[in-house]
Image (tube, rainbow, N blue to C red; front, side):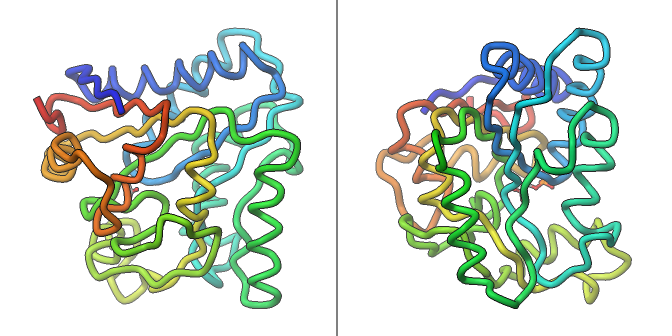
Length: 241
Ligand code: PGA
């Protein structure tokens, strides 16, 4: 696992956007694993700018989002589908059938989750997976204690995550307590992973990760120590050095 501190958060986001852009430029059939959250908003804004000002064939890419709130109406402005449309998909030339989310309704949930994992791995794995990190070390919505061999599934969110995400809702009572997330096993199958962490609130967890030698299920992101190609990008505020 490599760490790079780029100083300003704007530069850290720009760097990640450029890496996504380069991945598509290198391979127009790229599979991208995408994340949501506050940290990713400037990344998608920069990516939109890059794509709008430089020719790039997006017609064959496929994107797979990490997670979605359980049983939340996909049209709701709080859904991650809405987030992705608002920040990225509506501004670039991509068709509905090119982007995928874990299915978030109860009917046939287990089968649908298995199908998501299967689809992600079909033909070839995700070329570039983008991750944020929770203050508790979660990746996707894989909360502390998640077995490292977990696939896509329904999960209960921790109080820490619910509190952190309350800022996107009118009140904390409105935050869903369950979600469907890509599993840790699924994430680990990606060829390359970039984790972006910015802001003071992420400093403690990044520092912990930086100083870990062995993965520990209590800190889900520490599984990345086992992955051969992970870059952790930070700004000064979140930097471990
Ligand atoms: P954030 O979320 O970017 O809103 O801090 C990151 C995460 O929970 O993975």
